Length: 445
Ligand code: PA5
Image (cartoon, rainbow, N blue to C red; front, side):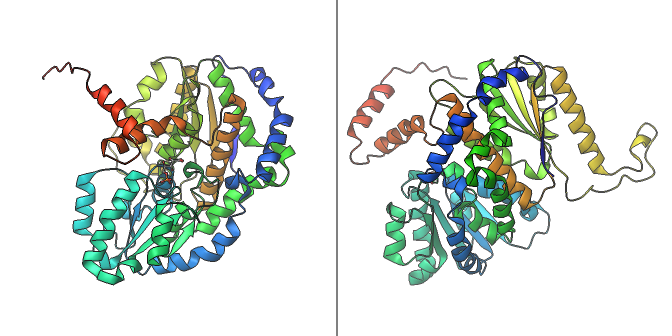
């Protein structure tokens, strides 16, 4: 069984009894949970979308698997979940000699990368999947225009056989495109914001393409969510709520950074996924803890010095799992001074380093909550995603902010649109011009 291990969570300034004030809000938050579930505001938790998804997803997965390559166009919550699942459950693409399916996720505005991918990919052997809840995100839609043109030039009328979309059922430019060209599509349900959507078609279509057991991901998530979704009054007993109370207390006692230290290397890309979930949900009104994704053991040799001996403002979610293998055994002819490794497997080093780092962090007064995964299976991966999503929402409620919106990031988007001359953005363009008019102070190096 997966578990949270609390014995080192109250090191440093946060004490166990500090959580009391937050825990006592359980009845109030349980009532809010019941109400928001009823209003359909928390589809990630209620998972009512799963039945139609189980019906509709297999057909698109099968169609996509006629191609060797899938090119995903999407950003933020429309990309990070798929990447986490790819690296955790279908890591073959990073292995020598890979001859299976390949998933390419275009989640940046990188002119070089897009150009190279389009040069190297064969349109006849590529399924493009454009993923956007709003259907209007400029980065994604810009890529869509370029890739659509690439497909049309290569395949003519048949281009639409190589494009699928995942978007809102009714609204948005992408939905209009799907209707206009008869593109196969899957729905992002109402109120399912990007960073809470990994366990919908958003993450599961790419996962299914890779042959990942997407139903096990859903089952794991549903198992974790079930008590909350079926009986909101169970919130007080749910580990996600306990985690939220701890996270809220950390913030109150001056812990500005929350390290996500992942010692299951296959799950390392859960770090950036969690980082976006936590930061975009909770960075509001001058509050929130900064998520800091880190990979064990790699980051022991980069940022760990700062974790250990920098400002005492860091707490840690420390993730371990049971790898699918212990790895190769050390040979029996090691030089003097290294003989202690004989008879052990490479995986023993990972475990030893995880324990060493855990203790070192605690010795440096870092409150540390250990998340011990059952194994590195999709089921465990689904459970972990749901645990962290629910904990994020409850932390936001305890903070008194809305964990489901992201108002501050809208300004940058508006200004980029203004810069490119999008109609209706004239005021924003003036603001941008005023900003850019400030005389520069260059120092040549
Ligand atoms: O979590 C979020 O809501 C965001 O990160 C979105 O996923 C991101 O902005 C992309 O939005 P969309 O899916 O509408 O293209």
